[in-house]
Image 1 (cartoon, rainbow, N blue to C red):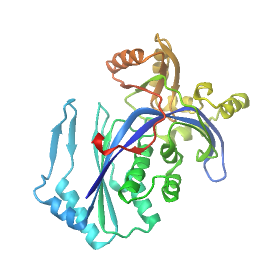
Image 2 (cartoon, helix red, strand yellow):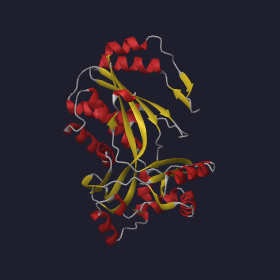
Image 3 (cartoon, one colour):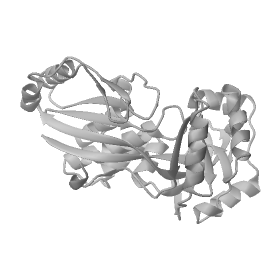
Image 4 (tube, rainbow, N blue to C red):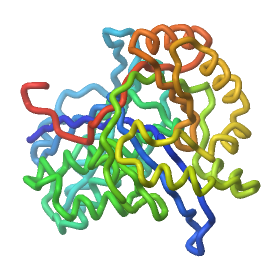
Amino acid sequence: MKTVQVIAPAKVNLFLAIGQRRDDGYHDVTTVMHALTLHDRLSMTTRSSDEVAADCQGLPTQQVVTCAEGFKITAGSSKALVNEATAESSATPGVCVHARMTWCEGITPIDVDDKDNLACKAVTALAHTLGRTTSETITIDIEKHIPSQAGLGGGSSDAAAALVGAAYLWGLSSHDKAVETVARSLGADVRFFLHGGCVLLAGKGERFVHTLAPRHDSVLLVQPACGVSTPAAYGEFDRSPSYVAKELLDQARIAQDAHDVPLFNNLARPAEKLAPGLERLWNMLRQSSGVEQVLLSGSGSSTFAVCKDDQTARILASDLSALGYWTRATSFSSAHAAPLPKRAY
């Protein structure tokens, strides 16, 4: 048995310019992504078939616990999970991957099957790319601090972290070409999180142009009760497209420092049509003392506000939380998906 813990940072889009729809169905995209200190945490364990069978003995069929912070966590049937993994490993030699989710800090839980979990897909794809045939079960315990359908890249970051974790478990460098190849195949956001910091991307969002010097300002994240799906936001955009002015696009392209990037997102209005309460939130934030900049991240539904200091972000987080919003005070960061040193867990 071998275990590793990996951080999976969130991101915001400082700049997001959706362009013309391409012949391949994608859109031209120019975006500047910036990592945050807010992060999910993955604990990944690999076991051989014999170890899985031994670990199965005496496990409860269901476990409900309350953590110190008071958040209820329901773990699925651990015994059934392990038995299923053993059966699959015995029937088909190779890597079997399972995920267990813990939802923290008021995030609404969602039910995600392993076959739909991007972190599981990432590890499975890496094993296939490497031609790995060793019979083993990898369990990914994901501690979720990044909400879903928020434009913060939580699922993609978890996938990048899972790739980094699998590479560690298999004695592979996280910079190995196979890791990069699989990340690229899973989406632009996944590849971004392997590098983190602040990056300008182009093409359909998958082409790295250059890195930028990161910001370190305090940031407030706010998400309303409803999420916004990315396909729905793009569909709304296509019904009434509004493209970015060339001058603004050029300003984003030549910026070498994140502070010089103009905050812009032409998916904001399409997202607002899908979640009408967003405009009210934007107005509240812009009128709040100590808030310097406000923008929807990605396709939403999370909005980020750049604040003059951490105290401002925390006070606003408390005030808006009382109104029913999910909030988090955080900051810009140069973080990327990376394993934690063993002394940290």
